[in-house]
Image (cartoon, rainbow, N blue to C red):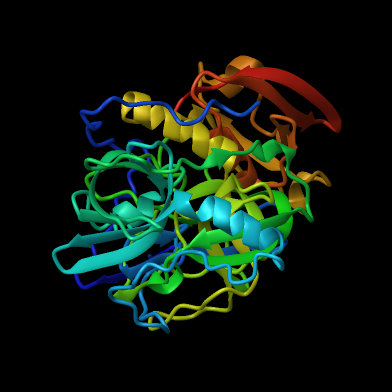
Length: 444
């Protein structure tokens, strides 16, 4: 979520037939990220979660810059305007622990991102991809939760250097964006880990700028893997992004309200945006403290390698229009493998691709039998699902080697893959389980 402030939010486009525009790539050479390894509250309909959770991004300050896709409609508990950079301090080198070592290694690769546009503004976080200034962050950070496509962006490094930056490309489908610092050099790129190697219980460290407090370090563990959440889209109204909750062919979630709120965590001040469309994300769940302003920041392992981009937190209960809650130990990060793929594609092409199954699905219920999964309501003629042999009435229970417990699970995992990727899909028909190969189409 980003920490944000805004006074004139723009309604979110709910046209499900379109896709987000990427801003022109910077004119400088565009090196790829390290080699590939092997707002208002929105309803969450994650299969692994028993109840739908409202998730919010973590944006701080005004609107649009923070960790994940948080609703940024309330004043942060800590007011932070201009923060003096605080490098990681080590007073006793004879008494350090893993967190100290990781913070010292990874913090130089994490930056604070400030965005301002007319009457709105916000702060979030980002991770350095290259020495000459490519930085990965959340889309809701650079668009101030979908209110602007041309905000003024300033980036502060961990050692206090201040840069202006421009957008290379945005991807509202998975809430990621790449920006390029102007005339930057000598930055320390983050090292990527393979997020598919994570285990529940692994120790992790979150680094970012919650409430504008740069170089903040918290630690915890991986609480769950292969979780799927649904959050409000941060695509700006003029973007042509297809949203999972919109109309048109494609996977659609059917999230319902629950006891939790999932929101992008930003530092927010001002009125909420009026977005109604949503996106489905595959995430790593952690209990490391993540708060508004952490959006776009790093979740790293004990080697100081990136395993996720912090994107949202859960809040117990409805915080209402006048406020937003902080960490309750349920935070979410976009897996590093997905983040790295999207970043590489944006740097190379200005935009990233996403898979399309060509099926309309909903959560299977007891009326549909005793199988948990995503029930296929219809398929598109010539689409990936129909071509592979999937039919209406099938219940999809597995995709790409992962269990599918509902429509949000399926949509999130399909979107995580690139257009044209081939994988496996498991469905149940008439009580018989079948696994087939499927080649995804392209989300337009």
